[in-house]
Image (cartoon, rainbow, N blue to C red; front, side, top):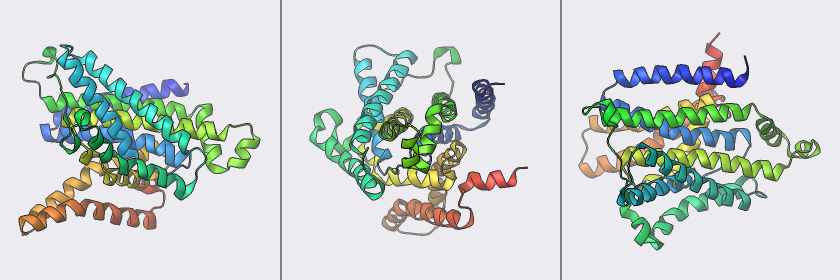
Length: 333
């Protein structure tokens, strides 16, 4: 059995299982599942960049924003022109991926000769500059207010009472499964082997005939495309996009998620995406159980997720340096 056939088989099994799960979950849980699927696109792409090519990015939240704004603008413009439907939504998501690819190419070319903290500084600057961009072109992006995102109701063939959250979960899961399938095959290709070679030893990779700069730029582009799709799907789920939703905090969360999940493993990206949804929900439950003033509760709820995520990162790095996926691999026979 070839690698592609095996990956297709596992993707089909996962799709069938997730389809059954969406029918068993209530609407809010379906929405959470869809959100995790959108985050998975970004964490999987970041896993390729950080775990397999050895490049650090602190600006993937901004890359998600590029995809989200592209989807919002295209969806709204096409809807104003009278063009709606699932085909239009797919086109908008494709435009979001394309915009993120271009952004990733620009950042990748600028950072091709940078390493370590210098590369982190460039990507950090991208994340910090996002609110300024939306403010300068407020007529297009509506500054901090953001944009609403037009979304058609579920197809009529599914029934007039088909839950919107289940339809959103199907959309997000389809995008996440497509990303995982493509990346799993990419890692088995010559490009995937080049990524590992560059990460392990750039000098040896050059001696082996690998174009190190080209490989690193392509890693940025692939990772950005995945993040752009994740941002576009997140915009579709929330039906809005604003700078606050794609802040520096999101970039830090994404990086911590792939480390906690298991750096360098696509399965670790799955655990990281789930943690991005579960931990904020858990902290909200904790804050709701405490007797606090509204102002104190708001401050605590705003900062507690980052603190819990940081504590989780410290515990995992001490107890399980391979992340959650490393623990799972040791437990399974």
